[in-house]
Image (cartoon, rainbow, N blue to C red):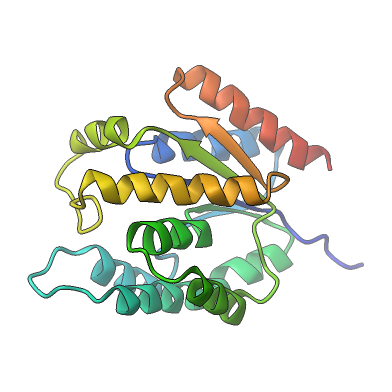
Length: 210
């Protein structure tokens, strides 16, 4: 008997939207339904990809060329897909990923203002036809998000960017969501946590029932 392929869910959003708290809610929800799943993150998810994550996030004196940054992101993603995500989906497990390619369109495409066509070309090369079944996009005004993020510790290379960078990131995320509303759920992360998680549960229920 052929195994039913697992569901691929990504949680996206800018700084300070509450991804860590809400990822815990998602995994608790899956546990309560007896769903086999794998939780992972990007950049990262394998030893090599985690090393690339460290290179990407570390503050450094040398300016990082945006195209070099983009290529490192996709190098980590290629390894992650081959070693972790695709095997788990093939086993019938759900994969819950903290950020994926939408973050690349948002941070490198929107924030860094790189050519979206280049990102799309790399996306096709690395992923083929693979896309998340559902993108849970936590949306929040960047001013509020940065205030929240500032309370969590020292800023990494991305968190040290200026407000205008994060405004472009948010705009790119929302543009992505508007382009394919059947795959995206835009969730107002400024609402009380209970309401945010009620919406997350509703979206997970839809996938569980399909």
